[in-house]
Length: 236
Image (cartoon, one colour):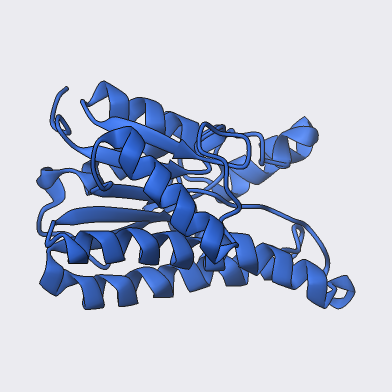
């Protein structure tokens, strides 16, 4: 497929998991791709505004122009019961998952608006934004991903006049290094049977396929939405 030929993409958190699958899929579809990750070709802390500005500048140089696709995939996942959750733990998760998406989205958006160029942003949220699980206490993670959904909607509203579309995806249980369910196969099987309509884990490439659609011109009339990629977990 070459539907993204000539496009320039920046993927945060692209060194592993969903981010890596997204970068690979974007390249297969013809886009030039720059990866921003703590351990990636372009290394930066997405919570640091100055580091983000420099990283986006480096990405533009590497890509031969400003990124016109941004996938905000950098994220952290932590499990801590609500009553034991410290303010620092809360701040750390919100900083990466929500502040990071804001900072990188803002930096790329500013460049596209200044250049009067259209573009597409896809933020990676989670079904945890709308679905809680007392067996896996993640108040800070859930709140951060709910914030990503709200941020996506507001970005879409403000950037639409500039030809920039902004959407989100909400993955369910995906087989990535962040997934904790596979630490306990018996518990994982029980959870999947009870909570996932398709009765299996998702694959990173399945999320990547939806992200690439949202970034492409095939989704030219789609903005401000969040697409669940959760195997039906949100309807069980």
